[in-house]
Image 1: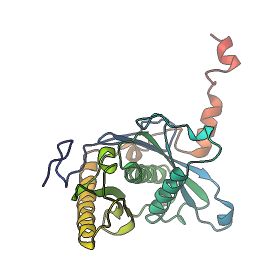
Image 2 (image 1 turned 60 degrees about the horizontal axis):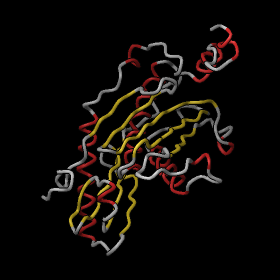
Image 3 (image 1 turned 90 degrees about the horizontal axis):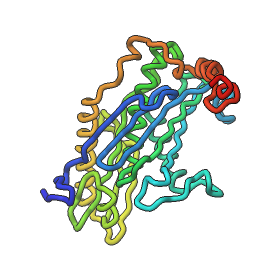
Image 4 (image 1 turned 120 degrees about the horizontal axis):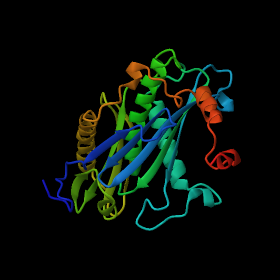
Length: 276
């Protein structure tokens, strides 16, 4: 074992903090903090599917990933102000979406679309893997609520997934690498794995020297154990139990949410100003 710059051993993950329902209008939301990497994920359900699925009686799941301008050490331009979306954001959005589609049965929800919004509030390495783990938690919570409130007939969620990175730092395999470590890594790999231990995706590259198969096997084992630890630690942050009580939250149903918004007076509306 070695000690890293933050005091961790090479097989340790960063401290984990999870908060649920930090947003009021999504069906489920999760604030996910792994070390100094902070992710906000929201899940919504709406009627309709992309054109290629119309008439198929099956649903769709899509994900969007983006970083806030001040999520990194130097401010980046907001994507809405760019001529086109950032290629990295598109690639990670697709990774999150296809990873989650492996653990759902979208025929259960009919022709509806699940959208998962992943926003990086602060980036310190491992943002894509943290987003996948957080998105899985948010989707599982949303599924429980949709069932409890009768919006879907049965569960479409098969099992949770989690993701984590590992890299070779100064010839030493290390789990859950931060930005400081990632910037000097000889190799960097991401693993996406189900709670039952099945593999969904592996991404990896070597920056300076090729990795041996023995080194890859060590990194794989580090990630497998790290994901088990992620699942174990996430259980210390239990889901809210409102889906068991079937509380009436206007944000849960798309049509109900629309009616709720129409019933409210916008803060900056003329009518609101005249009544003050």
